[in-house]
Length: 234
Image 1 (cartoon, rainbow, N blue to C red):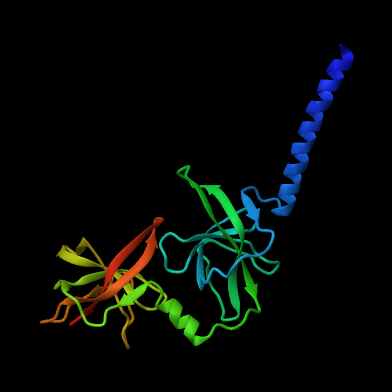
Image 2: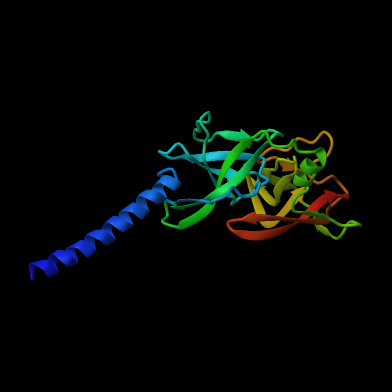
């Protein structure tokens, strides 16, 4: 009876030790960060150009929003020289890239499970050409050969200014006691020479002209793809 009990306890002990060893190996491979899964080989350049940190973890890593998309979150793993802080804005140099090295899984404050790319900022990469930078500035934009229909004759309120200088704006329906009321019509206004958009700016439609659609702009928001008209006052 004792031999049988010792045998069973030995099997259980072996199983526990095996799982404990595997757990320790996994933590070692992932720098001891729970939720981080590293690739065996580094992945591709994520082609982001800037980040804004919204949470710094105890590990020293950071959760950040990438570029001008509304729902592009990444997990940044620092090198020996990097120390992140809340609301920090990180703009990549021409010889830097955000290389995808794994995935990170975590729970939001609302208890929603999210899995986001884990990246490292790599120095010494080949400088980005003007063509590449221009392509990024035009990312998501499709321009028509000829102007399309008039979508509005009203003013617009800027909601967000993109890295390219263009602005995402909402149509203004009414202004009451200093409060601006907007409709659901969301547009992209292209930056022109001398224009310098800012948040909540009221872009007035010139007299006798309307906001005419000249293309479409596609971007990600809250995990879904949105397509909005690109306008010009003509």
